[in-house]
View 1: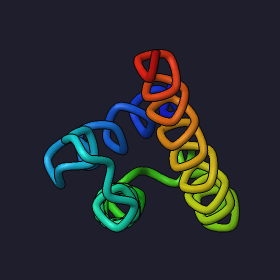
View 2: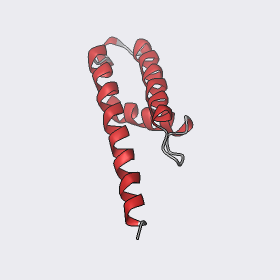
View 3: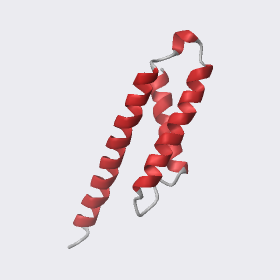
View 4: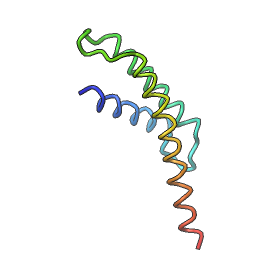
Length: 86
């Protein structure tokens, strides 16, 4: 139940940090993911013990999510630019 909420928080944080603006700025994406992770960790501290995941899992999801998000954005925009090059 919490994992979709985590994903929505990360996406909103990236959106509000400008990670979806053109041109793609990797630093804005990274900043948004780290802000989202900070919000998640604050929420994590306030949750009852039964709903808490491991902090290591949260950190791992943050680092893997950062890599995946950046690679996806770069591939998407690189592919789009190549299609319109003709």
